[in-house]
Length: 157
Image 1 (tube, helix red, strand yellow):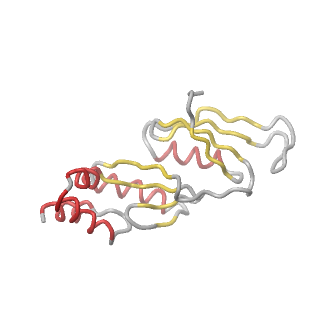
Image 2: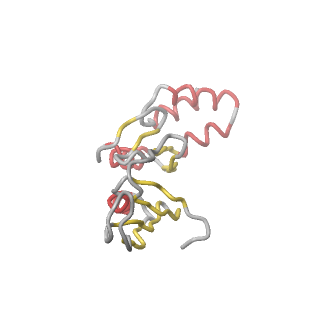
Image 3: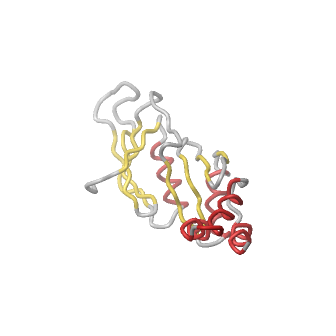
């Protein structure tokens, strides 16, 4: 296990979530599934307790801790995309698998984890500063999924 690992609390579906991420994002995999050695407040001996996995190279641990805690937008994965095709692929995978759209490139998967599907053209425009950043930012504010062509047009003015 990595020295620093993101721990994500799930009600009971950590393994399903980890397998979905591994199928959806490159450089992602399920590394290990660990079962509970005894009964615990939200599960039984033999139930999946933790899942070690990576999401786009980031080490994570999924913990099936029960319904006590919920995810919020205070934590999200930000996935940088190269073009509209890649943006659409990730967005559609998350939203189309029981997730929900939000604003400005944010969406949630069916387990409540927030994702920012962010084309590099947007982050580059914001980093450029000045009027280019303002125009790109204003264009983004009216979007759900980011429209790469619209951001490029806004950058040009």
